Image 1 (tube, rainbow, N blue to C red):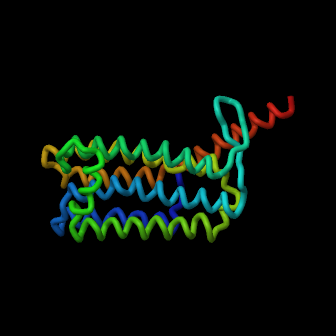
Image 2 (image 1 turned 135 degrees about the vertical axis):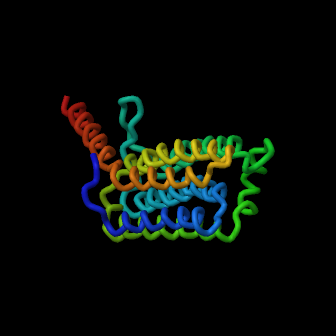
Length: 227
């Protein structure tokens, strides 16, 4: 369940996360803005996952197996994408609203207005950090998913759930971090946050869990079809 060897992409992840840590501790970056960008990282991962699912739907298979309460049906890839956008979007909405309310970073009760205020809250350092995240996850997925050929064999069901296990950890820590921000301890917590994030991202093999779950479901379906 744990990774034993680090890839080039893993070393890139370490560098990407050490940049904001260095910025907060030694360059005077705003810790609240750093946590806000980490919230937006959830959105970046979700958007890239939509593109990955669209690539599979367009170039590999139009339909895939949909699991629903033990029953299986064939559904369009666009159905998978629509479901992911709604479900993951709600997940992101809850995370960001909790972060806004607990951290006090964005005052006011208007949901839509809160999101409109985000660009104005990011200074040049925050925008640079956001750009680094976008570039890293884009390049990582181009090499890991497209050039490697993984898009040819990855099921839409697995793709749909891939972001969740990492984001569960990230959301918990970001929300906890917003509490520290409200007490003015953001600089200390960013250190704990980055260390925890790097550990879970690099040493806990989330994809292996998904592969095992996918194989178990496939065996279950095969057994059902043979009855």
